[in-house]
Amino acid sequence: MTQREQILAQVGALLNGAGKPGGVPVAVRTRSTALNAENDLPAITYYPAVDRVREVHGRAGEGVPAGYNPNLPVVRALDVDVECVAAGDGASPGDKLVDDLAAWVVAALVPADWSGLALGVAEVQTEFLYEVRERPVVLARVTMRIHYTTRAGDLAART
Amino acid sequence: MTTYLGAEDLDALLEDAGVEVTLGSTTVKALRDERGVDMLDPTTAPIAGTEIVFVIRRGALAGLVEGATLVSEGTTYEVRKVAPVDDGAFVRAACKVSP
Image 1 (cartoon, rainbow over the protein chains, first blue to last red):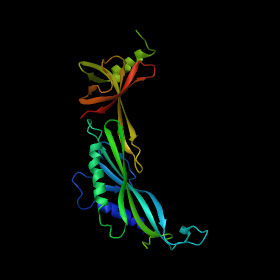
Image 2: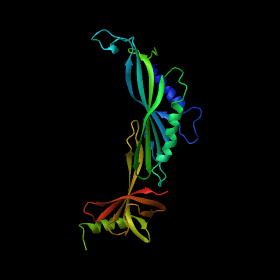
Image 3: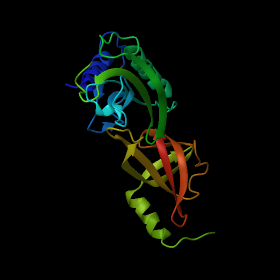
Image 4: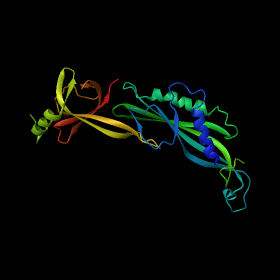
C-alpha cells in the first residue's frame, strides 16, 4: 500500500475518531453517489486533490533529473480536500453551520499523532461556496496539506 | 391594456392545472414547476437540489418581488427571483422554502 493510501486511511480514521462533536456527520471518502440536499445534509467528504513532490534529497548525475533516481528520498505534499456541506435554514445561507464542521476537520487533523506517517499537517485554505434553490446550501472546502516522504520510485516506501 | 398572443390559452391552463398561490390578501392560480438541479459542483459527487418556480400572470399579484412571501398548499416560500417568461404575459417566481 502506498504511503498516500495510508495517509488517506488515517485522515478518515481521525475525522471519524475520538472527540468528534455531536452533530458532525461521518466523513466519507470520495463519494460516487449524489448527496440529496433535502435528506443527506450535513455531510463531509474527503478525497486526494493534488500530491506534489516538494524536494529531492541527494544529488543525481549531472544532466539527469533527480527524480530519475528511484532510490532517492523525496518529500511530498499531499493536498487532501475535505468538503463540508450543510443546508441553511432558510433565514441563514448556512455558512455558520459548516463552520463547526470545518473547525472539526482542522482540530482532528492538525494536532493528531500521525505516528511517523506524516512530517506535518497544516490547513492551506478554506473556500466557501453558496447556492440557493429550494433551500440554501453551503459548501466549505478545507484544503489540508500533509507532508510525507517516499522514495522517488517507490510510493510504498517511507524512506 | 397590453394583450398577449395566446394568453387566453394560458389562462385556461392555469385554471385547469394551476395551484392557488397567496401573496398578502390576494390569491391567484399559478403553475407550479419543480425540477432537479445539481448544486455547487463538488469535486466528487453532485448535490441534488430542487428548483421550485411558480408561473404567474404578470401583474396578478401586486408586490411580487424578490423577498416577498408566498403561500401555496400549506407551504410558505420566499421569492428569490422574478423574471418574465417569453413575451412577458407571465412571470416565473423562483422560490425557496421559508423556515
